[in-house]
Image (cartoon, rainbow over all chains, first blue to last red; front, top):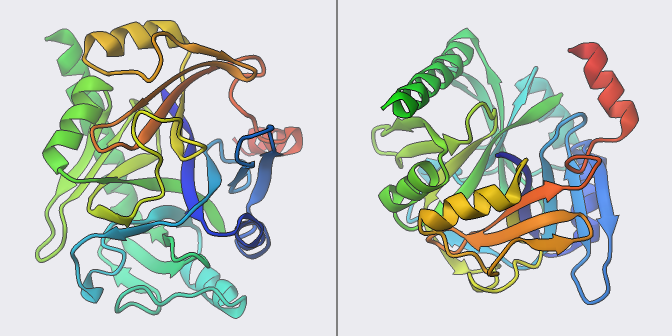
Length: 154
Length: 148
């Protein structure tokens, strides 16, 4: 089993398409309309298998957290090779980087991150992992594999 | 440059119940689980060997975009590719998953099985017809291949 599509709720498919392809530089992957069904519209970063389905609708989630929590973990995360440069580029294109109390890239123990929103308020994080961040992710994957192998033997 | 997606959120009302479903029933791996001070618990799961992790975010929809759990998702779903939809259907049914249809459904794009997690998030298993899984444009794939 592997994930190929994840939904992203947007109020206006055209506006969202413009944002994800024009501003973020994603590719449009699928766009078709079956009679009586919603328009099936997907986008993805270049070369990535996982596609985002731009589903028309309205969405609001209450995490019970304050602005100090930033996205509060309710986010789609992307890796980037240069977080500060992306921040400058995207901000110049009008992308909203105000998420909770955060407005610009933040240095963390595991790298640099910057949170932003799409026109519908969906939250995203750009992550430029440093060596610690990369090692941590790799270690977690190894651990998960070991746990899985153990479970199969048991 | 944005490289790739690493995390996608799933809103759940109860971390433990969701963890049990995604690991125990679907067979995903738990990848990360820690409690930063003064922050929500960071809990992620993923199918074996999949790079993209799902963040199980504790929260509730105050404006819910999702159709009812037993209804068609109308596009608001997470889709998983599977090599054998009928077998997965049997396995998951035995583990207590209630699919929306009595058997996998033949669709123009493949064989699909529709269900929902305990919080009503719509999930789909899809055994795509050739070409497998909706693919990236050929030029992009060739480029990715050269890079690899």
